[in-house]
Structure formats: C-alpha cells, structure tokens
Length: 263
Length: 268
Image 1 (cartoon, chains in turn yellow, blue):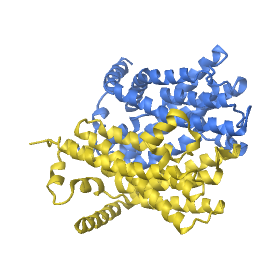
Image 2 (cartoon, chains in turn brown, cyan):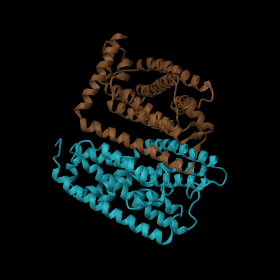
Image 3 (cartoon, one colour):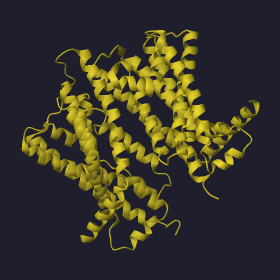
Image 4 (cartoon, one colour):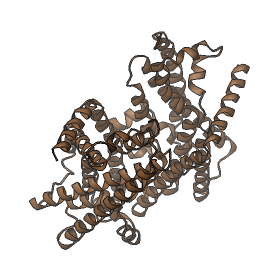
C-alpha cells in the first residue's frame, strides 16, 4: 500500500513534467474546456430567460448542478479517462505484457498511470462557479454537508470509474471497446441535467443501469437542501460499492483471456 | 469531371466499411436528443397549458430539434477535418500534389460520399424517431419549401465543409489543430442553433449574430423547413448564405496557397 502510494506520487510528477513539455498546448486545452463550460452556462442563462424553473430546480440551483457536474467530469478526466481509453491500446499492441511484469498491481497501473493536470485547472473553475451559485442561493452549507458532498463526489467518481473500466475490459474480447468507452463518456453530458426533467424508462435506465442522473444530482441535492429522501444517498453509495466489486471480478475474468499480441 | 466520379465511388466504398459504426453513432445521438426534448417538455409543463417560449409552442420546439437532427445528418462534417490535418502533418498530401486533381475538389468529393453513406444508414433510426414523435413534427405546408430547404442545406453543407477544410489547413502552421477545431465547433454549436433556436435569444444578441456566418451553419435551413422565413426574407437569406459560401471558398483557396508554400512534406 505504501509502495503504491509512492508509485502514485511518481505518476503525478511524470504527468506534470509531460504537460510542461508542451505548455502552449496545455493552456489551449484548458481554454477549450473553459469555453465549452461557458457555453453550457450560457444555455442555462437563455433557458431561464423563458422559465422560472425546471421541475423544482431554480436557475441558480441548476447552475450549481452544472458546476458540480463539470467538477466531477473534470476530476474523472484528470484521474481516469486517458487510462481507461488506453486499455484497448495496451491490449491490442501487447504492451500489457510490460505492465503485467511490473511488481505492482496491474489494475492499479492500468487505471492510474496517466494523470491529466489540465483537468484539475478546469475542476477549479467549476468550483468557482459553484461558490458563486451557492452565494446567489444564500446557501450556507454546514461542515457536515460539505464533507458529505465531497464524499458523494468521491463515490460518484468510483462509480464512473468502475463502469468505464469494465467497458474498457471489453477490449479483451473485442476491438470495438474504445468506441464503447468514448460512448459512455459522452453520456456524462446527461449528468448535468436536473433529474426531474426526465421520466419513464429513460429516467430508470439513466438512474439504475447507467447512473448518470445520480452522480451529480444527489450531491447537489445534499448541498442545496433539496434531499427528498435518504434513499437516494444509499442508492448512490450502494451502487458505487457494488459496481466496484463487480468490476474487480470482471477484471479478474478478463485478464485471464489475455494472450499478448506479438511474439 | 469523371475522375471525381471515380473518387466518389472509392469514397463510398471506403465509408461503407463503417456502416455499422455510422448506425451506432446515429442511434447514440438520439440519447442527448431525447434528453433535450424531455427537458423542454418539463419546462413547458411548468409554465402551464398553452405556454410559449419565444415564438415556439412545445410542438414547434420539438420540431425544431428534429429538423436540426435532419440537417445535421445531411450536412455535418464528421472525420474530414481530422483526416486532412493528419495528411498534412504526416506528409501524405505529397501524393495528391502530383496527381492531376485538385485537393479541395478531392476532399469535397470524399465529404459528399461520406454524407451519402451516413445519410443512407442514419435515415433508419432518425426516420423511426421522427415517426415516433410525429404528433409534434410538422412537415412544410408548401411544396416549394422543400426546394428552398434543399438548396439551403446544400449551401450549409458546403459552408461546413469549407470552414472545416480551412481549419484543418492550419496544420501547415501548427502541429496540433485539434484545439482550434474544438474552439470553432463550440461557437458553431451555440451560435449556429444546435443547442437552442437562436430566436429565443434577446433581440440584440440575435441581431448581432445575423452579421456572422453562424446562423447559416444550421439555423437558417431549419427555419426554412419550419416556414419561419418566407418571401423576401427567404430570398435575402439565401443570397447572404450564398455570399458566405463564396467567402469561405475564397478563404479556403487563400489559406491553401499560403500553406502549401510552407509545406515541407514531413516524413517524405
């Protein structure tokens, strides 16, 4: 465990060195992400020129939700996304051989090797928007609420990671897995919408099968005093734990199928 | 001309390989569309019966997004810009320079073949979805609208292609064009009318947008289909759109002639 922590610190150092090699590019990607975030917030602004609320969600509550959703998405991108996308490359080219030989958990290396620093800058901009929205709502979260929010964000990240890692493991069977991983990532866009906007089968699918509508909505509901029942909390936490466990079993089964690529 | 027909043929054969891919993409694209429609439904429901957003009823709003999907299917640039930038970066365009063929014409033909195949595949899920939403979808009342719509979509496709082509040519100067492409795409996404109909914006913002090419990337043909622009306004709009196409063409030619002088055929 201690050894893994030391290795992980080294991944961060590596990531920083890599980004600083292409400073202009690093800044340009931050600009791109920032622009898209501003664009989404503009959309909220335009929507609320014409309406008072979406379900029970008021304007600044929706802004808070967009901020939280962006925060979660950027943290996910920084910590896990590139790694999950690259799994299929490692398998296709046989580079996984090298990772299997290293004296550390292979899943750990596969999942966390690449750290994307630009995303943390973007996550910070999301925090700025959330603080501003909270000010507009005159929210004064208690320490417990803030801690609960962060814990739920962590659970949400774990949930996303577990699901996406499982999809990445499909690479052991099919070459199409990379497309599936990107497809899942595109669904993140649903997470910033207020859950009350959806009904029926659509809502059920994106709550229980692909829990996009839980991951950002539940933490924001906690922060904005909008919790309807503790069931949602338990559902998010339960799904996080269950998906992580399932993904570990799935990884064990998958890696047994690995046959290396060349030689 | 016949040589471009051969290119078209090759392009169709090559993209047919991706038909399953295209089908999946078209189906997946329906998920955010459904989300958007449900969100508007909720907003209209919250405002009470007979509510309007700008000049749109719920049915018209749903129609708007369905027509956007239709125009997108026919005219959106998919992989073309990445391919062009990649060919420049890796020095692959050298082989086209010695062929008796114009690179812009060659890429345009490939773009058309890609759209033909994509439309042929995507029309199934998109058509089914529109059929499913038929209570909200109102086809044009006048037959002539179809003609103007077709003309405008063709110009939209040209505009989209030419602008993407020009952006990809930036690869002559910088190694990483992806950021530039994404920045332009962001503007196009919001100012073109992808995210919401532009006429629900405050009038001042809408007026300002009329002086940019962005509404002609998407919003204008959609408005024609919905018969929100008619008569003199329609004729004027088509003329302005044609002007933007010519301007984009001139810019594409200019950037190419400048860029090709800097071209160093990396990789041989």
